[in-house]
Image 1: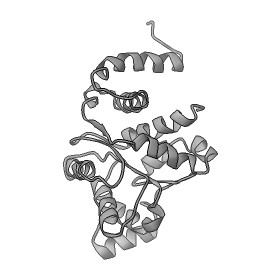
Image 2: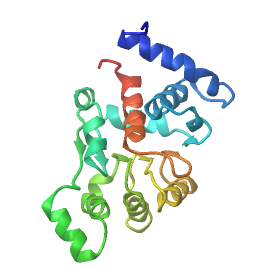
Image 3: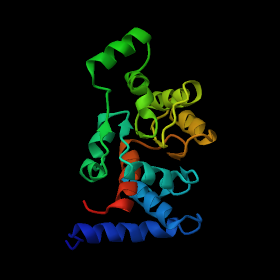
Length: 210
């Protein structure tokens, strides 16, 4: 059986296959790169029309990374997938608290999900940071609450929770707010690999070493 074996050739061919699905979306060069990596991670070109990137979101994320800002995630899968080696060159780190014992206790005491408790505990550390949510709609709802009620101001929110309960509504709320730049996906689709792909695509815009 004959098939492509070199990783770089596989990636290049994948991007060529994705390209026609983006040509009518009036995207910038950088948006094409972010869209392409998200679609590639999903293996689904139907993502093309439902990815939403607010004005200046990519630039805001790049500026945050270059200034050494940290990334805060809802689940370990997102934290694990982010290219931390390259991110660390700029001084940033990635944090996730969902597995911490104190977060479990807070969630139980307050009657909320662990992902909500984690975001609530990060508190002011979220200012000027990048927030990457790939699993829990409740985490995204909590971040939006912190923005509105506690005046928390992240640099950008990459909010791509997945599922049939709350995911579409949380992402709709993210897209409808105008305070914080964002990257999201409409509807029930999404997930940790897609959030990771968006983050890494932006990191690679600054440093394409792997």
